[in-house]
Length: 188
Image 1: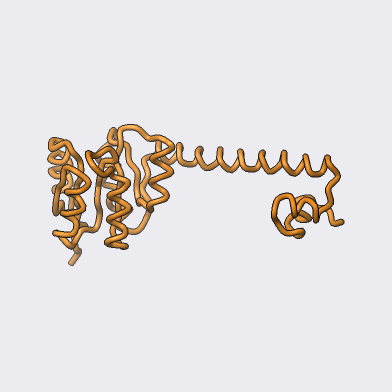
Image 2 (image 1 turned 120 degrees about the horizontal axis):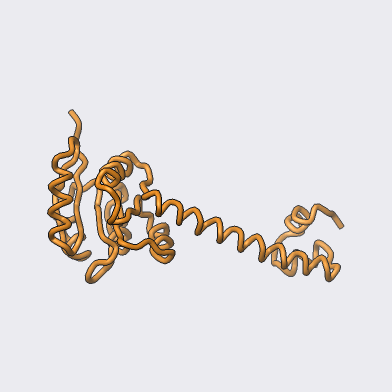
């Protein structure tokens, strides 16, 4: 006997919650166990229900936002999965989502089939991202790594131009001599 995935919906728009509930209740192995309009109501419902597997929450909520809901929910129930919904993906939300350990990030404009797949994926312990969000997330980290490499590269070239030894470079960057030697490929 399969135990259904128990879902809590948090969104300030009743029509959105109602629509998602009706669709999810037609899915085998899925059951909406509660709804809430605000983050505070959602967390209260979570503790009242005591048996939620997945929270689907809008990021922009009155009171505490969906990201804070995710953080609090994960502190209360470490096994709970949280999918954040938004109309607009931005770098700040992506960063905060990662920091609190959200399991999924979906655009509200996504097809309902994507949301259903996301619920199944996070219930299995996988991460769920809308393709547009995943691309933005990858770009965000690649840009950050590239910026970091360029900064380090310029700094290291400046040290070499000043004819600093490995030990002097290590002191400058507060790192070990071995790291400086490894980076330069030379030993002094």
